[in-house]
Length: 279
Image (cartoon, rainbow, N blue to C red; front, side):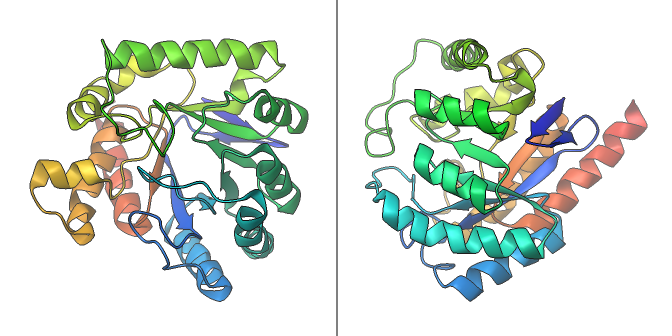
């Protein structure tokens, strides 16, 4: 359960780490446009680190359902200045949320240590970059692309198919000289999944782990929460997210990607205190 991030190993055995989401996009589903100004973005990143985010996950391209891709140059213009600033001003690890190998490479040069790839390291160039740099990487499962993923997603057995994807990707990475200790796996809740698919994955989180590698989970503010609770507003997804953070920690998830850091941090630490006493 050690996660190698270039020249450092992050210990995920006893405490779940939180990733604070920092979207530098005008069109992200939950907070598009909130952090497009440089000073606001840096200030928010520092605040999340203060609230308990061990990692800041910085993205310059929306991957919401139906999102259109942005150019490489535009994505770089959005993320690189903020990464450089935060790398100098906080001890939090920096993650780049991108599907583009060139953007990932420039982000690593600017101070990032982690590549969060919603493309699941299926691009050989991205795997080559991870191997050459020793960066940590998050392998996420997605059926289709952000533009198409919610157009009638189908599975025979979603748990088995996601786990099989993880196993195949681990083999691909090993063949490309990526060490298993560099990898964390994310089932991609909401990425080419219906509400029943999402719930089935959440019920069976422990069955998704491969080679004892850590699991990551991103459910924060996602639309399936509204479909379950019946409350459509983004603000009404706050407490369901906190509840799922506690549930995920109890099921052994090691990395949680969240927008609202402090309440999720408190929820996870409370859950860990209970679990430690029961051990």
